[in-house]
Image 1 (cartoon, rainbow, N blue to C red):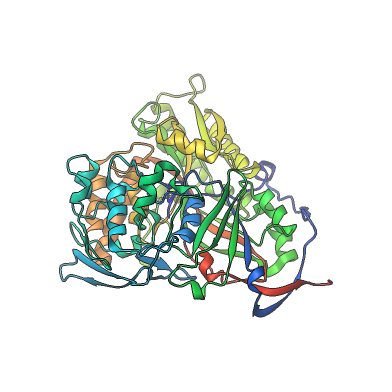
Image 2 (cartoon, helix red, strand yellow):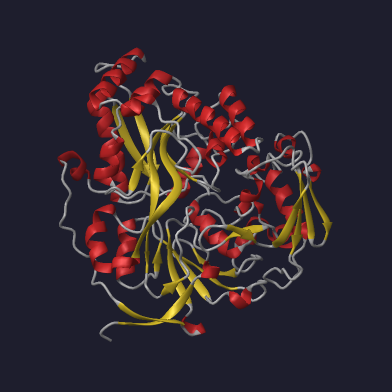
Length: 557
């Protein structure tokens, strides 16, 4: 799901003083009075079916072919729907395709579309809309950063490289309601990809007529349960129920209003003030967890999240083209202190890239179990070997996303650990999300915070970030042995063999150190007791089609 890559992220952190002093603040007070509610099991009246929800950032775009990042992903998932979608608890279920056939060799998929599927303007949705959208993603003229994700489809890679035309892509509209996909080889994770936004159908007439402006509310035509009716930049987005959605009769929510709020502390204050009904990950500063849990109880939800945060490095340019230096920086970070003291235990220390997944054996480097004094001693040896010393310290800038004081504290703690152990001189710079994405895309940062949320429960979604051909390989890592191992895994149908290849790929990453893992996520959220239909799932995607408002009143009123 992507930093659905992109960089999908959040962090939950405590003041730096807690890290350096070794004590929690323990004295946090509520930001506002806490309301409690009497709630009925019955749905509220249609006029009251309005959900006020926070998203972490204002999306850079809502074009499914071009969007990256969790905020855009979450909004697009309510505006559009693909061949498959997710249930409230995160299971893969039929979307616009009611069924599909797979050829015996595993290379041909035929999807049967809902005959009553329509666009938000009432026009019929056809298989040709998928053909158009998929060709648009791989067309180099589009500049879609997820283009390489379609590499399993016949001719996709050649089209991306400019060697073939987009109309040679292995997709076909057999008839109005039958969409056929031809793969290069069996791809075990293919079906799990299909709920991702870059594979959604698109309404060609709107895009051809309005160009980049087709995503404005007055021009956008979508096929999901909601349609965009208002987008106030840095204000809010309003989505209203789409009466032409095939499942509209089951959608109770009439409207959702999305508020971009970057700082968790601000989001919490607005939640407690009653401005928001649902606050997603990160819902609140970790330092507020204890008193908040006592105050609002079950309104706090903390669930596993298939995501990893790390520090990326530009590995083909000085100073980070030196593996000894990268490993030295990796060794001296005390993840347990960072996770326990800064995040209140709501993050899991990470020493490798791939998050926990049943059946997959994470490849943790041996040094992770060393005592810190041994790790620091080895880091100092490597630092010196790389040519750095007290008189010639590493001087570099660490770029991170503007997200409030908690993220700043975390970055300061990281730089402090480096400075204390190695004598390096790391300066910090933060940027707004959209600006940072642009700087990463144009390789304007040598050292940067990043994170990745899995698009689907399969190691490939993390492994692809470090393939040379992947547009969001921001550090320009390129190791043929790694690519060979990932490619072998991607084509292996036997799960045990496939995971073995991913494990080999992860060991190569651990050896090369193209990034420094920090932590695996948990997803803390705040949900008012009258909001129904929000269930925990590993990708923390809560589709508005399942959500509704129950009849309720504040206690004491």
